[in-house]
Image (cartoon, rainbow, N blue to C red; front, side, top):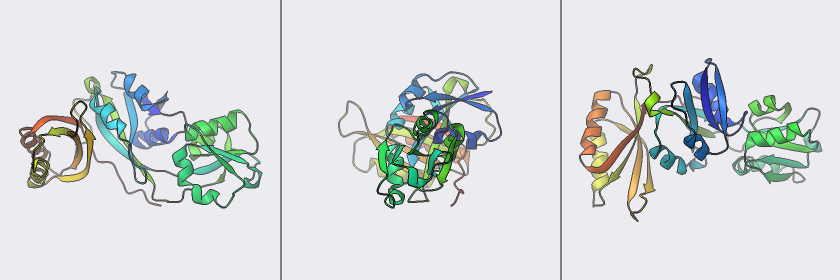
Length: 281
């Protein structure tokens, strides 16, 4: 059976992403309290994977995860896009009028603020995790207390959904990497890659980044994301992380070779099949 490391506890959105990616394949989740713990305790096994959130369509990029991946022995082998639906959960038999406190992660609270403006008597309290908030309410049998979390957390911790989909913006999506140890990567991947994540340190001179981007266009690659991060020890110099999609793998490899001759360092973080973004409200 596949083991999948997730950031959070059972019922969190990372577990939902794992279920979506692996489909009907049986998995068991390994709970990690932080991304540092997830990367630091990774197993070198062909049946061990990790799910790592990297960006949200509303909140933006989780920047520290770039450095964690770049400094690890892991590679991206896939990606999954998940629509984030927040639900108001409470003990069975409770009504929204009974609630006086609601717990959740601060980002979840912020994304549901419009809903709670209708209930000014409910006190919103921040906690480390959405699923953890649900577990606290369920395990301690707290009446008059609710949690904002996914429906899966409600199922695990015996909570009822008082109101579903309370997020203000329904176009709320998170992109997750699927990662695996470099020494455990399959020799013949089941899916042909059409996307790659690459990072490089370009020379600090005029027009250098523009020249690299021109090379990508020359080889007919589509730049879907670019992110700069400081280069430790060299103030005002940067790593550039880019995501590329391509139709022809050979053209992509030629582009990588051409870029490699222009930059100080280049690292391929993963080659994989592009995730499906067709999930709509």
